[in-house]
Length: 305
Image (cartoon, rainbow, N blue to C red; front, side, top):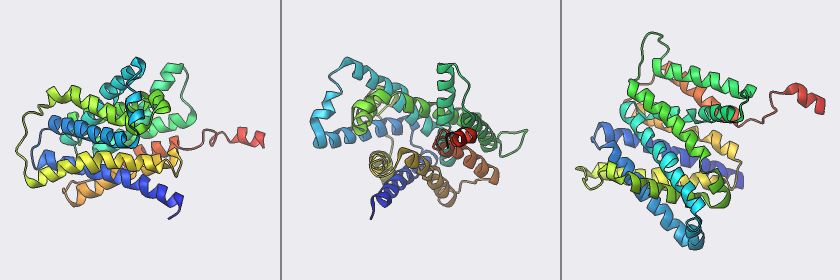
């Protein structure tokens, strides 16, 4: 297997596992009546703990070096509480009130909010490609929540609100740890942020009260913590050693694809043609943002030539 093939394998496997995780969460909410907060708390604490233990055996010195400077500790807490925790919680709440395919697609609104944030921060208009991305996001979201009907919503208001907040959380999840990721291994940053976010969230998750778990529910939770969180993230990171981040980002579209296939075939979730078109438009943002910045500036390119 060539390096490129390895990169594609890892980049596809990670999002596929995330897609499985979303559909499994939908099953736990609808069929097993497991509290959302409890699953979020369990996922953050145990997935974070597993990643920290993993990093301890790989490089224990680097694992604890991030805790030696107050500046990095503050940034780590900010990422855990304002990035990691909201991203996990809003995603699962969007699944609870909607479904896994819709929640997974709406989190791809993250680049839209990053565009808006950077434009406001720099006090300048978005680039042409960013304006196209905004139009695609608005049109895609409209089709997703209305199925093309102007006079009615096909998703509950709660599902829409949590889904949009999931997109906002994905933006903060991307922006907050930039300095940390420049100085430390991404696995260390993610492990500590999950663990810290889970510990802070624990009192709200009521982890002391364990719901009645069937053998199937227990297996599902184990998968969400391991395959759907720890291993999926490690696969995703491993792909960056072989292919470019833009390619890895585009292949993350396998997450909503997997969630949709499982929801339709296993959970009997109905997906309309308008929803599919809306999902494709929103996913198109990721592809557009991965394109070279000067691709649409043909005149400038011709002058250079």
